[in-house]
Length: 356
Image (cartoon, rainbow, N blue to C red):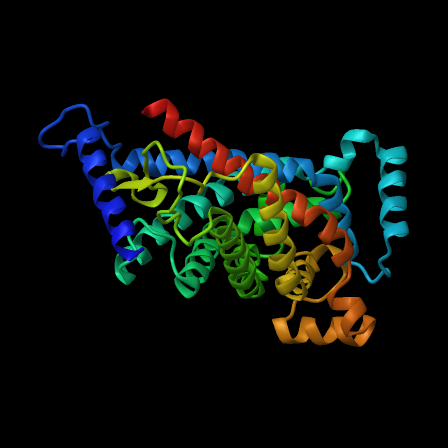
């Protein structure tokens, strides 16, 4: 049996050599895009993914923030009542109030995060000797955590501005630039990074677990980590693909039988699972972050992570205070993350087809 597999492997290689001569001998091998084209592709795909995902769940996100920064007890009934009265009193489009600030923050955040993730995967893959393959668990988790930290560090002031606009009436802040101007004038420039530490502490498990879960589910879907060769008794054809993480090196993988790519709906489900796990793990720090970001307009005093955490637990209790709005996050989070990951993957596939 072992010799049969070996012979099949040799025949496969011979067939592949006949179909794909070496790059030196044949000009027909598709030219590889340069590194900067790869980065631009990831930036564009990430930006679109973030914009679509956040716009889809903006009303739910605004409602969650309002509960997070107040002492009101959260319930699904109260959340939908707030949505309804906001619609009656301020109009339908008011449900997306602050979404322009969200887009200003989310588009660069998502673009940087997805692009950084692709780069960190490539770097860690080369370092650990897994170039062109799916990373093992720990480097996979590390790549996601580093990507989230990089994006959060570069775009944090925009996140603070978005939170301020979400919890204040129109009369207080007219637009994004007005928020920046008033905060700088009345509270000082350092306020723009108030709450940054809990943000990073929350991003590490959130981004790490989200990317880790999504990549793991895709690998499991393909049958073997990294989409390795599968044996098939019905094999008649050889399919060639350029691995996503090593496109510019044109590392050719031969796969036959099975190993198909997930359908969009399957990607949505994988992303939803990733969002559910990531957001549940980091949610208490998200509550602390929002309190610190909006302290200047909600009557709370500016404090450290520990003092803010203690105040929430003292006033509202550990579970009710630190997990307030989590049920709404379980509704909006999986939807947003599912849309985001799916859009990124499909855009990457589309752009790859266009340039090839």
